[in-house]
Length: 527
Image 1 (spheres, rainbow, N blue to C red):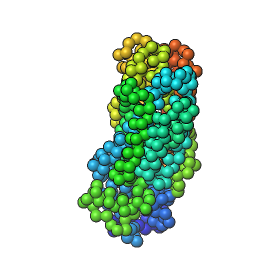
Image 2 (image 1 turned 135 degrees about the horizontal axis):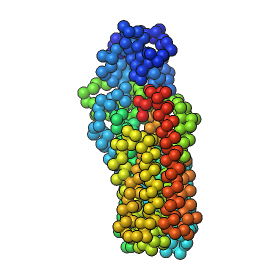
Image 3 (image 1 turned 45 degrees about the vertical axis):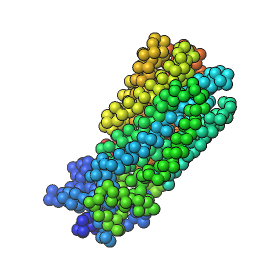
Image 4 (image 1 turned 180 degrees about the horizontal axis):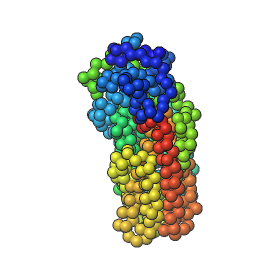
């Protein structure tokens, strides 16, 4: 026999019988024709760790009439009040807090994108000034990805353990200092080392930005807001291209790294004072209680929070820790490694494009350095436009939509080489379309991939996806050193191969995840 209270009324129910097809529907269960009840997700009453762990948000069968569920809080027999955080966010909808969070996230994404893209626009000038062959740039172009390979996982864990905001501040300080230092490099070895260390910080940005926005949004906007935030990364890369075209002729290539070093340090100082923390992260950590109470007072001034309130995320099953072993539970044994492969394939193609396109257009297509820089910028701007235009569609289609985008990317990427030999206008247009599709895919998988995990694992799960995906980001530019001797039109045909493979892998993920959610419909509420 179970007893619990809801809105100060005590209900008692027997232990649930095994569900049958006649009694179980997606959202409810009826033990008899005369007494209809619903299955809800309530915290376990005797949980020793009410704010962490898997026990506090397991499905609990209870005879709670639907007329009693019009509030996002309920009480236990001991008088403890549960504040259902997801329901609070759904009832509040999109408000000033989410808009403020998007503005902060946009700024950090711009800085992150700038620092990722700066090396590609400096590369043609390094060839001329340091008298090095183009083939020797492969390691330098991939250097930050060696750092991201480990930084995504390290700072994803930091985000789950110490907070998304804390992790983002540390990331910006780290890659800001070493990006600025890179401006004083005098050879490829020094530049490789400094870019690798900066990559540690760069790698932690996206996992925590995704978690920060998805965990603070109402259910119908979780993916959309996170895609908008990460969609600003390509704009930052485009800013690097515009800065290269405007400033390098006057100040030389180091100016790109001066800008890329100062901006994140200034951001970290300002963000320490003004950037908020993830709502659901605060809900899971008692040390964040005071901030959570102030936030609820700000977004719901009409709600009086009881002193003994307990915050719960009622639509997610949490885990006792952020250990990577939990990334393979709840039907994710195959899906998790397939998402890693999906990231590898798209990042392989993405980083090949942004790393080699400016240099190859200058060398093989005999374009001016200005045209090379503007084409690289068109790739990045197209990425942001694509991300923003596709965010609503990807919110609904998820992995299926991403598989379709992979298919579209094949002919678009393959056409870049031919466009480079025809006209500047055709080149910029095709580069823009390639950016819209390829970077639209990346923004989508950054978010959709992370949404398969609960709050207690989200930044870490996303960090593993981005971190292991960096193998592709390393392979892509290095593969360019093997393809650089091919005619440019043939080189981009090879560049389309990862997107063809990515379409197959993503469709398999879609099929497996659909079957998983059909078998466990309560998991769909957390996504």
